[in-house]
Image (cartoon, rainbow, N blue to C red; front, side, top):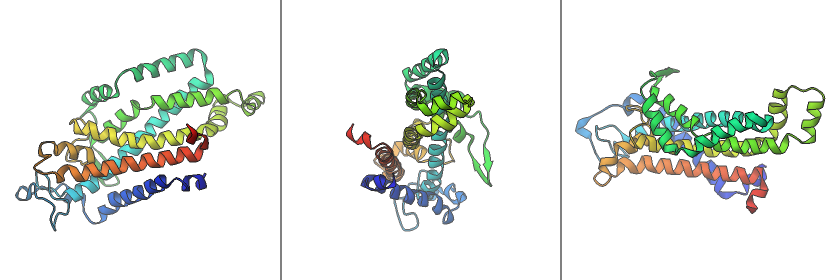
Amino acid sequence: MWLRFRRHKMALFGVAMLILLVIYSFGGAFFFSEAYANTTNTKMRLQPPMAGHPFGTDTVGRDILARTIYGGQISLIIGLTAALVETIIGVLVGALAGYYGGLLDSVLMRVTEAMLSVPQLFLLIVMAKFFGGQIPDLTVMGRTFSGSVIVIISIIGVTSWMYLARIVRAEFLSLKENEFVLAARAIGTPRWQIIFQHILPNSIAPIIVSATLGVAGAIGTEAYISFLGMGVRPPTATWGNMLDGAYNYIETAPWLWIFPGMLIVLTVLSINFVGDGLRDALDPRSRAT
C-alpha cells in the first residue's frame, strides 16, 4: 500500500503540508500564549502586517498570527473529532443495516434517506440555534474550551454520517455471504464478533478514505457555520470565526481574511489530496473509474 501511496505525488504534497500545518498550529503555541492571542489593544486595531505583527491586527488590536495559531488548533480538533463522530455513527448504522437486513435495514435506510433529503446547511443552522449556548465551557489539561466547540463537533458529526453508512452497508451486503463469514456462523461465533472482527476489518479501506475526507469536510463546515455567526463563540478563535470577523473589512483590511482563508484552503486541499492517495493505494481499481 505504501508503495502505491508514495507514487501519488499530490498525496505526498498533502502529507507534507499537513505536517507543516500541525507544527504551525501546535508548535506555535510555544512562542505565543493563548492570553496574548486574546489580548486586545484598541490603539493597535486594524494595523497591516508589520514587524511586531507579521499578519497584522484585527478590529480590537489582537495579533492575527497568534490567533491563527490557536484558531488552527480548534479547527483541527473540530475536524478530527467531528470526523470521528461521523465515522462511528456511519459504521454502526451501515454495519447493522447491512448485516441484519430485513426490517432493521429498511428502518435505518429510511432514516438515512430522510436525513439526506434535508439540506445539511438547514440542519446545521437549526441545530446550532437550538443547542447553541446550552453547554458550559470545558477545561481540559489546564486549557478552557468554549462549550460551543462541543456543540459544533456534535452537530457536524450527527449531520454527516449518511454517505458513510451507505458505503458500509454496501460492503457488508457484499461480504456477509462470503465463505469466511459462513464458516464463522457455522461454528457459533457471536454476531457482534462476526460484525466487528470478521466483516468490518475487510471493509476498512473505504472507511479510512471516508474518514480522511470527513476531516476536510468538517473543517470546511465549521468555517461556513462560523462565517454565518453560528459557530464557535469568540473569544475562542477558529479560522472560520476569524473570517466572520473580517466580513465588513474585505477591501479595507484584507489581511483579516487572507491568512485564515489561506490556511483553511491549504488544510482542506491537503486532506483531500491525502484522501485521494489513500483511495488509490487501498483500491487501485478506483484509478480506472
